[in-house]
Image (tube, rainbow, N blue to C red; front, side, top):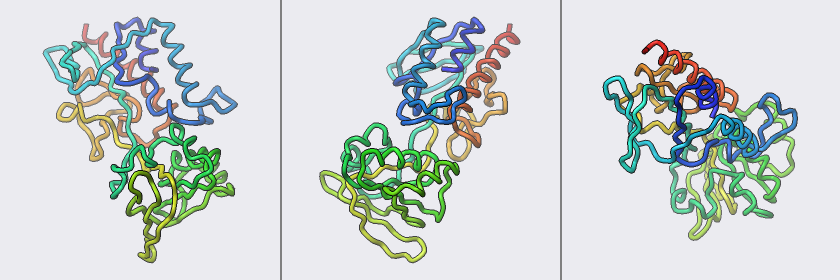
Length: 292
């Protein structure tokens, strides 16, 4: 949306292609506390709604569809959709974001939507008065564990290391919270249950011992993978699939830029995604002016 904002203000002929709803992962983020200009916490949905209202003032034009491939066609880029439709354009900004990683353990797929979740904001209220497990130790895992304490009787936070990786302020809140129990140096080997989650089998990495932890839900936050499969063979990506760019968002294909979580970079936050989008739009405008 920031890329669109800057491109539209530059009076470029721009269209926003969206598979679902503008806002991506932020839409299911409970509380945002670190976006400048908001001294009080704001929900991810509200923040994205404000973004959307701003770009709508510039005559937002959207095209809903799933892009399956990008191709070069002479001086144009061809954006190809799952239904066979195409858009021909001089420049493309890829801002498709990322999706949650999965554990890949027995029971995860079978119990998806039956107690296994990757979104506490979406599913937390279903576990009122119950015990749940959160897997992970980064910002998202700790933030979502704190959110789940609003509903769950107890939150078991399972982390493969012996300390959290989350920001210190989040660590302090979680470590002080009476509802959160930590399982250090542990991994989930299996999610148990038939028609619903009934527990998890965890292994203690330092001893090799296993035990069953009885919980009614499992929330998994172990990082993200880029939604970049559709550019395979067209754009350079790193070993994890993130699109490689320079500091000005340029990919290896002239006229194609990447911004946000889909891009290979160190920090993935709302503010850095917005900064990427602004830079990508500025550079797209520069590319177009040079091509005239």
